[in-house]
Amino acid sequence: MAVDYQSQDVAFYYIYKALAHPEHNGYVQPFTQEERLLHVAEAKRTLGSEIEWLCDNMKNELKQALGGAPNSQFVIDPKGKIIHASGWSNPVELRSYLANLVGEVTPATTVADLDLQQLPPPQLAGKGVAVRPQMPGQMRALLVEPSLSREQYYVKLRAEVDSRFMQEGLGWMYVGFHLDPLLRVHWNNLAPPLRFRIRTPEGITVALAEASARKIEVESDADPREFLLGIEWDSNVLPAASLSQSSLTLEVEYYACHDEGWCKLIKQSYSIKLQPDRNAGSVRGRGRIGGGQFRNR
Image (cartoon, rainbow, N blue to C red; front, side, top):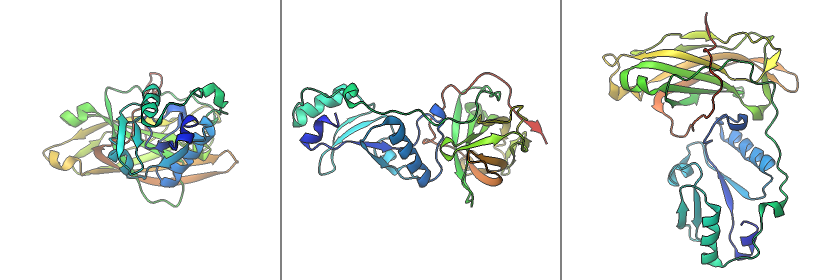
């Protein structure tokens, strides 16, 4: 359609928003605007399309203004007015609408006519060697904010809690450390494993506040390092009205090893707010059933 309707002065754009399904093809949510632009460049590389991209800011203001749907579709007139909208992109519907709006274009260009040079996602170090924990039930992503760091966040933190914790004050918290494939790093398992510690506000208790990942018996891999931690909320100490304003502080140490051959120790910290992150997306097919990979330190 973008090719066909160029002659009718219709411009097409993709909009990069937050990832709807982190971990799909290995990609994880970016933490900075520069990293979002890396995702845009990666989309251009893998899709092979020449359609231009618009990139939302880190406050996700465009996403929210357009309703927050993950695969929506809009037609906007030259004055900036939305004249057609779909919550889910529908090419047949869009072509029909454009035909009525500015005229039909025949014959219609097909995807095969374009001969797109599509490329695969980046190839990381081996995956599937670490046992992934089974989620205890429905999980909700929490708002994670990285602290200012001189180093790149080669590893991205994802934090979630189960619905039981939000309702009853006792449940599970998931923390997962995911390598960013666009930063070309892997785990060097000859180095000390990732370790972290969590500091909680009064009224919140985490059963395992300090832990390290299990040793992996292969030299390198790209699997996430994941933990399931018991978490408890005492509403007598921390009122429900104050829960969403409370934060946990997570400090992590890990060795980032780049494909070019260097390895260095990284120390970083995050703030985990006890409020749902509506821009975090949902993870599908998290992995095989197994125990959480942690041990006491």
